[in-house]
Length: 171
Image (tube, rainbow, N blue to C red; front, side):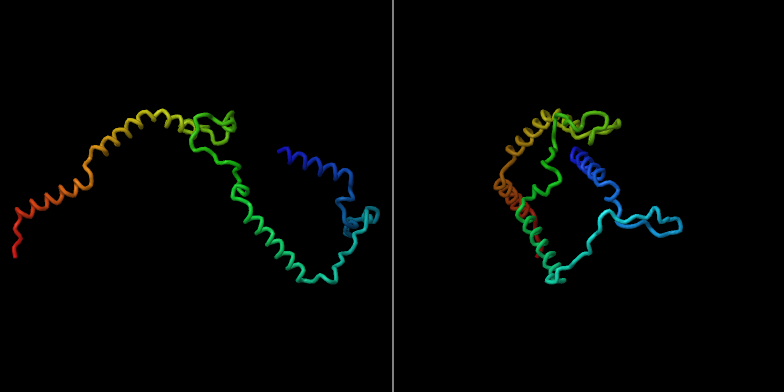
């Protein structure tokens, strides 16, 4: 915002110093309402564009290729964080409300009843941690109490042997 203000100040200062000459290129248009008194010559003559005799259409192509190569080199050498629109990673979990979520016009804040912003959601999740720890402990205890894979395979083989002994297969 400060950059925009300073740019506007420089632009206005330049326009006031240059006066009306900065915005006129030639005489007034010759129309039905134009009068000779209003027509005036430009403040300073604009020199005609002179093309260098050595430069041809290939010079423009060479300049474009050189600019593309420089851009490619800068893009490849700079890291992905240099081109990121977000200067840092935003947290997915926060228990404190950041400054941009304070006030009436807070961005990303819950503004209507029934909405939950990510800070409120994070606080709700934090309140559920003790219960989640208990559930995780119960799951870990069940996993430790279950039989190993070798024991399960041995039990399945024994059940198949018993089933084979009681079942007759007609030939």
